[in-house]
Image: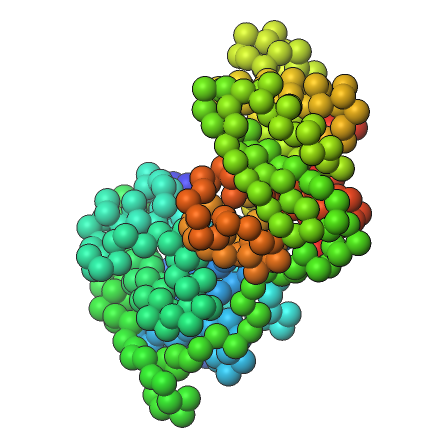
Length: 472
């Protein structure tokens, strides 16, 4: 953070010292050349630019099907210029053009965590996108004044209130609203848009409040009367079913609704028997077990290793796919924190670091809550391999992300439905089954991708590999 003295010197240099610079700055301001100021002001003073170009400042927030830029996609993009709120809905080409044109004409863009999330997604999914060079990321702007955490946490600290009807929605629930909309529920889309709009209203409030606090804290030579009150311009919009009427046009989803592929793409191997195991860290807790053959899934819960081995080898599967770490970081010699090499080699493997870079959430294999599971998984895999079986490590959450199926943490109902749409049959979609049994089905599906040579192996030869589906 710059000092008060340095800040005054920088402002003086840019605006007041040479007459030619002052004249040029006035000329650029009249002609709304925000790039001129973005290129001359230091980055930590870019927050001043939106207050000089308020009508051309965009507050933007995206909603996605998940967190991975590799495998997930944008569902909606909301943006506001003063009180004019618009939304792009995936599959709606007119709203796409409106978004691209609005961004191209903007002088500044304000997001929350946009540099890490929103903008990379936008640049991936819109080839011809143009984004203003002045970008204020409120996540990092907030840290300058000691505010850390997610947007909702900072809103509460600053006194912003959301409607009670939207308090129960978070990022995970937003993905479920999108899935419900794809299935025909228009009210879920409206609710998702309202949630997005209030994210943007929260951004306006945060930006305005923190600007005032920063001016006061650092003693910047700026009058608070020059701070534009963006929060006075609430996003105004209404929904309409008439594409020619004013408002946000709402219609039924017209794109692909199901997973990104089906089991028919693996038809050369679907006759094989595959067993998936969603292992738990203790024999006292039930493990999910699934057998798939010719698209038909049978599941059950099993407790002990001896029972798991007996039930599995009875079916003589072509592949055993286990949802559990089956190795430890290279250099480690034990599973626990008293390992003398813990500090040197850490608690994560290469495959987990790769997934993290791709935006796939997973647990490091040797955090305290995973240590017993990793130990059990490695011992069980060794016993199966000694019996002559081919064993792979799988991670249902990653596979579900890649296949375009909601994880169980979002909705067991939609996960079961997604597996059925993928082409798996069984009683899991109507009988009472556990989350672990449904994840075991996904683990078995990974085995089919492996047999069909449509997989990616994450990791290295010394640590072993985690197998994930590879979908073109």
